[in-house]
Amino acid sequence: QVQLVESGGASVQNGGSLTLSCAASGFNPADVVIGWFRQGPGKEREGVSSIRLKDEQTRYGDFVEDRFTISTNNAKNMVYLHMTNLNSADTGVYYCAADTNNGGLLGLTAAWFNYWGQGTQVTVSS
Image (tube, rainbow, N blue to C red; front, side, top):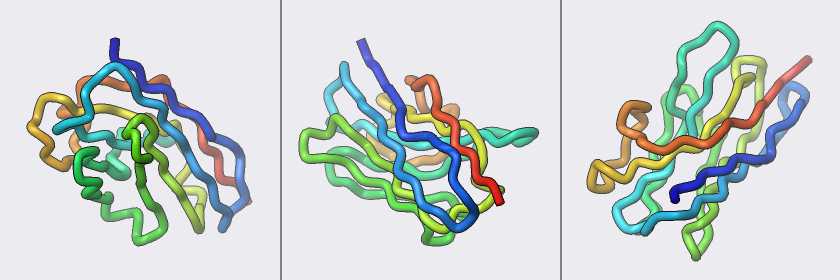
């Protein structure tokens, strides 16, 4: 059974940093892409970053602006999102998701991801 469990969400001040974790299990990491998505209050869900597990190639949404870094461990069962210089626009529920159906294409389209975690709340305040 595929399981994705996010953790690390918290309240942080403007300009602060935060690292989110996704524990992933139940699948072969070959050709699997793990993504981070978020949905803020009154906003649509958007792709933050994704990583292809086999070679650790990465992709970021345009709004990231070099502030975030996605990474995985050697066992490919943890994916991290390190966020810096956070602002109020970064507030939202952050989801970890897995794409096992698209041959490892490195995307940020939510519809491509077929497994999702429960989400973790990130709140950025002044």
